[in-house]
Image (cartoon, rainbow, N blue to C red; front, side, top):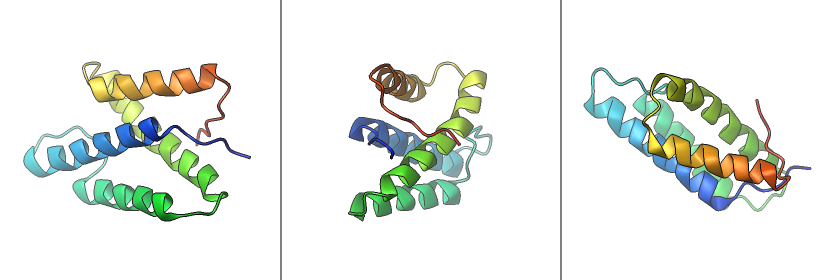
Length: 105
């Protein structure tokens, strides 16, 4: 069984994906790990999770969050100034400290 990821963590990753989408559309040298179309697809997937009432979907949502943050985390190591990434990592650390399960892909 997977425990729910706090809504704030989901909101932060959605914000990062939106930022990455715009960054890719407006900057020919963007270092964001996903293209604008990939960001839009991920955002759409998260919207689908929000509409789902199936409890089993939570585990899949956790896995998607973990996989996206794995890719974005690699970017963080290249650019330590991204406050959104730092904020989400702090949220995830606090969830781990509280014993919340987070699926890592």
